[in-house]
Image (tube, rainbow, N blue to C red):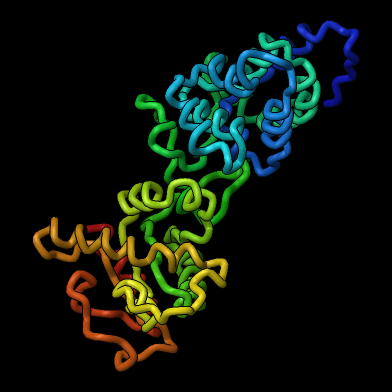
Length: 345
């Protein structure tokens, strides 16, 4: 199939816009984020953001308004979020939280705003996405059914649709971000690892074991979600803690120093790429300690692991909210069996 659309500005661009809309009116805009190739999303953000047509307000705000974003959401993007990823990225993410948000709708708005140069720039990538999803589109039972991605990126609460059925959680704790044509793999257990920098290597080893296990164990590491942590750290962590089955602290001296606020002064906590995990280890601890109190001093979800390079003598006394037992890394297979057995009960 020939994907390239040869159009010059003397041609009727309205007809080309209609052609693209007809091809994409059943493709949910969440595929802009779920597709492995981010070029389409990048071009769309770049050209709408940089539009210099003089209007009473920035083009991206008019674009957002036409897509149906409320004035409150637009103001939140303007005041709080636009410095991360840019305004149009947030507009598209907020729009994609709606069940009926389609790429065809985006093209319609570009057409109504006479932004034909943007339509021209994205046309080839749009057709490439259509080709990628053609088998899925043809297998749909009805032509009115919108094809949706398995998930979209985590979204701050203020941008979510109250009525949306779109799942946001699997991508947060999945092994990798998969292409739209890849099937999602269900996980038996979802866990979050929390650790300081001296537990980083152990966290990597354990993550590899958990993710290669059958049945599959999904693992959340904050460093793999830097974008969301940067945008709204505590809200993101709170959201994740509601979704995971277990919280697994890596019990090291550094971890206890962090949660007790006795980390050595002058020591750089932001050296490694795992800085997010250490930076928010104390906050995660505070959250599950409060949960312990709410559950009448019953530890329901926290299971600490001592890495191979650490001994019991290196650590302070047990913290009640972490449970009576700290498991050793050498016992990881028994630990996995315990997680899966308890989860099935």
